[in-house]
Amino acid sequence: NKLRQRAKRRARMDSEDANNGVTYKFIPDLVMLGSLPSFNGTIHPIKIGPQKKTGAYIAALLYKLPPNECSATTKTILYSHGNATDVGAMAGLQCLIAKNLKCHVLVYDYSGYGESGGIPMEKNTYRDVKMVYEWVVNNVTKHESNVILYGQSVGSGPSCYLASRRENVGGLVLHSPFTSGMRVLTPSRALACLDIFPNIDRIKKVQCPVFIIHGKQDEEVSFQHGVALQMAVREDCRTDPWWVPDKGHNDIVDGPGIVEYIQRLNRFVRSLDD
Figure 1: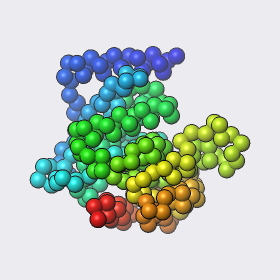
Figure 2 (figure 1 turned 90 degrees about the vertical axis):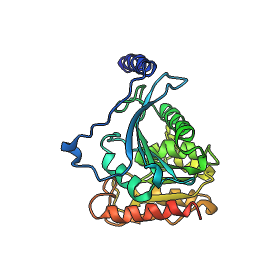
Figure 3 (figure 1 turned 30 degrees about the vertical axis):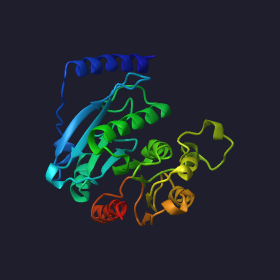
């Protein structure tokens, strides 16, 4: 079909670029984003791949702190974003996170999204996050304990998946998460065999500290999904959640709320070294 043909063409093109040493430049859309927040580090656009199974390359942006701000325990946030966005649109937030939390940030597009190759499928998001995670460990942090998995909305799926399979990962942040894809539509388990991203089952296997953020006015994914996930986290891995009053699914970091967001996220990141 057309998606598979497109994926094959993109894989060939990305493979040729990789073999020829092609590098990339990130040019933000200032009309859409406005001027980006100041950031002392550097922004590296990269293609990670190829995936062994699909041959796809995954597009990512690495926000890297300057060497004088790094230490042996500097964290890298591996950010799996929500559905209706891409790495470019997330640039302002990632600059703020990297600058204020003193950590590297890597945000990537799933297969079939943005400049990534491949086909958008649940199983491919698992391949994506696994490959990107291994790249981060090998090229940025050197230690799994310095990686924090961050999943926003649909990104909670691949993040929970990987956290449940990596006992040495440093931490997990779930931002407006769901218990599972089908449970967003109905609490009935009659269609359980068709469910995707079963976070409520996987979160029980996570062995690192977990921080959950959810807007109490969320009309897309009920706040009760966040509550259920919080209760399912192992007791020794639970941290205080942030149930955000008067905020919905996509606006938690909008306006003055960004200040408390950065403060609470920073508190969680600092706690990982306590």
